[in-house]
Every structure is written in structure tokens, then in C-alpha cells.
Amino acid sequence: MKTLYIECAMGAAGDMLTAALLELIEDRESFVNELNELGIPGVEYKIEQTVKCGITGTHMSVTVNGTEENESMHDHEHHHDHEQHHHDYHDHDEHHNHHHDNEEHHHHSSLHDIEHIVRDHLNIPDKVKDDIMSVYELIAEAESHAHNKPVSDIHFHEVGTMDAVADIAAVCLLMNRISPDRVVVSPIHVGSGQVRCAHGILPVPAPATAYILKDVPMYGGSVKGELCTPTGAALLKHFGDSFGDMPVMNTEKIGYGMGKKDFEAANCVRVFLGESKDKTDDIIELECNMDDMSPELIGYAMQKLFDAGALEVYTTAVGMKKSRPGIKLTVLCRPQDKKVIVELIFAHTTTIGIRESSKNRYVLERKFETSDSQFGQIRKKVSTGYGVTREKYEYDDIARIANDHDMSIEDVLKNLSQEN
Image (cartoon, rainbow, N blue to C red; front, side, top):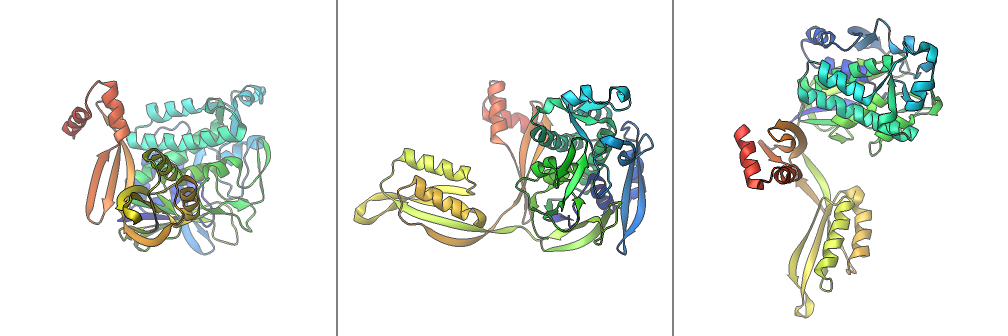
């Protein structure tokens, strides 16, 4: 299985990820020329070879109208120790009240404006456009949460907007070019201390970054400053299939994407591309028998278990003592979810005992793809591994199309199959 492992021992920013992934492809200069021909307003890409702690890698320089963001933002600047392209966010009120005398220079763009640039002006595949907007939506949602403003009221600084579009577009194009079957991301080093931005001094990780990285393993450390930017966090969150240690893999290529500032540790994102074994994982199987619950109560308990993260919940008819018919409830869950699942089984069933066993299961890698069809966009689950590939349209999308067009599900599937 073609696997990409992203090591974030010194955090991540958009330009670092771009540079690291760029080292995985052969025609680097040609790809950079393609980036410069995208037509992102005022943006120019340039690759530079640089050395950190004796390691040679690539730094991606992105300028907007001849200057990098941290050279032109002045008091708008969101300083951080990577000194990389980081965008400055403003809510709707600040957009109208902040620096009227520089309004022409300090223009701000909404998420709608960014979508107009991406979808109407960039000559790139639709899938890449979808990836770019998904990443930007993660950032906008995080800023919306941080400022307690609707997403529609979140505006992005002009220089930061073009800079971030450039970084995000480059990473999404590279991911499309590399096309890994599986992306694994290490726990993310976010830095420590404080960071200065247009709104004042914020703790590290900044609120937007912290919000994006919910449910993602991250850690601080002795390095003072912001090591992971919202752009870097959103890119990792969007493309990462899983987060954790490096899987067992035969590495074919390694890339180093360098930041600008020097630390005691090499300031870089490192990526590994290679082949990993087909996927297995460890699960916990929990079982209990009951002969005194109604079907309605059992159904409610099953839903509560699924809501809590159970991988599978099912019942089996069994014969119990005193010749009573009963059911066996079986729940499969991840080891880290076991405590919660056990508590829920006791809370929502009549059992007085639960049996536990550890299992190893073989699984196909699963990912969702969105494609265009005669009915509009539709999601498809693609499962790969162990020499097989399976594709299946999402039932919810098929059912929606059937309802919207007054068709049967069978007819919808027949029409979709004729397109392929």
C-alpha cells in the first residue's frame, strides 16, 4: 500500500509541507513553473536549497506582489517563530473599522471571495479545488469559533489570503500528484509560550490551531513560539487518514521541507513515501447475555453504543438457563474506548456481567471520494488492500437522489453505472 508518513517534530506550516512534498517528485522545477502559471493574484513561488543542523532540504518562498507576508504586514502581522507565511484574520466589524487610511492596501477577503478565486480562476482539477476549499473551510470554521462570529463574517487579510491560497493550492496539487493510498501523520509539536497577532498576544497553540487539532495528537515542548500554523494544521487534518507512530514501511523517498528560522533542532517537516503492509488493528470484543430486555430497549442501547464510537454492535439469538430464549450482545471497540463502552453497556442493558477478549482484525483501508455525476456530486467509499479494491456509493447520497428525482434506488444505481 502506497503510504505517506508526515513527521511533524517541529510542527508544520503550509510552505514547509509544500517543500517537503516537492522533494518526493522528480520534475520539481517544472512543477514550480506550473504553480507560477496558476494565476493566483500577485503570487510567485521560488524554491531555495537550505541547510538546518547539517541537513539539506528545500525551502519554498512565496511572495505576494514581491514581498513575503511577514515583510509587509507590520502591525497586522501574526508573528511566529517559524517566520513563515501565516494569514491574519479579522472579523466583519474590524474589516470596516480597522485602518481606513490604508483600506485600499489592506483589503480583506471573505470565504466566498476565496472560493471565487479557487473555483473560477485556477486551472486545476476539480478534486484539487474541492480539497483547497475543504482546507479553507476548516480554517474559517476555527476562526469563527475563536471569534464567536459566523463564518460569513470571517475575513482574511489580502496578503495573507493570497499567501495561504498559494500554500494550500500547492500542497493539494502535490497530494494529487503523489496520490498516496494512506496518509499517516505523527503527533504534532505545536510549540509553547505566546504568539503576537492583530488581536493581541495569544497562547500557543493559537485558538484557531487548537480548534482545528481537536482529536489529533499534539504536544508542546521547550521550543518557544508557534510551530504549527492554522494552515499547517488544516492541511494535516484534511489529508491525514490516521495520526500516530510511523507504520512499518519500505521507504522509497524522503523529503525535507525547511522553515526559515534556526533552532537547536532541525526546523523542518520530514516526509516518507513508500510501501506499507496491508492494515491490521487491535480491537476489544465485549459480550453479554440477556433474557429480560424488550427489543425497543435493546435497539436504544445499540444506538447509544454506536454514538459512543463502537465499531460494531450486533445481537445473536441464544438459549439461556431455564430454557429461556435470550440475546447475546456483541460490541467491537477500540482499546481506548473500552471504559466508556463498558459503562454504557451496564447503563443501558440489564446485564450484570460482561466478557472481554482482545482481537486482531484485518481491514481494508477506507477513504471517501466525491465525484460529479448527472445527479450532481456524490460520495463513494473506496476500500483497498490485500490485493483488492472495492467501491460503493454512499447510501445517504443514493437515497437523496432517489427522493429528489422520484426514482427507485435501483434506477439511480443503474444510471450511475452507465456513466462509468
